[in-house]
Amino acid sequence: MDTREKILSREGLREVIEEHRRAGRTVVFANGVFDFLHAGHVRYLQAARAEGDLLAVGVNSDAGARKLKGPGRPVLTERARAALVAALEAVDYVVVFDEPDVRALLRELQPDVHAKGTDYTPETVPERDVAELLGIRVAIVGDPKQHSTTRLLASLRRTHNG
Image (cartoon, rainbow, N blue to C red; front, top):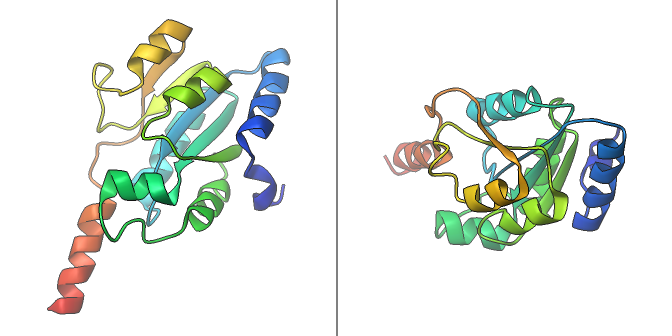
């Protein structure tokens, strides 16, 4: 499948997920900014995919990423970040979203599993309330949080200004 075909609108993703659900497949949803894609992101998404049959990934829009990460972020545009995430073998579909968290997407898509990285615990997942209400299992996946885009960018700035 062409990577561009993996990037869908919200409505398109909802339709695809409904088809997979009717076929009895387990749908996993993960999300993130994915600015400067690194090994931690890849391992997180591979582990998320292992939780089910299909992995859909929400990528924060440029405006959403700026609100979360601050000035100077994101470094890459939402289109570039979505394309990089879509290019990963573990990822089946990608959607870009504007909200500060994925509560609305969980309501719309109703995946079977909501995967979050190891920088969260089951108690600190922002969307835990909606997941519980909808019967969505929350899975904490990936390797320990040892990779950070923020730290990587700070290191690059120090080297450049050095």
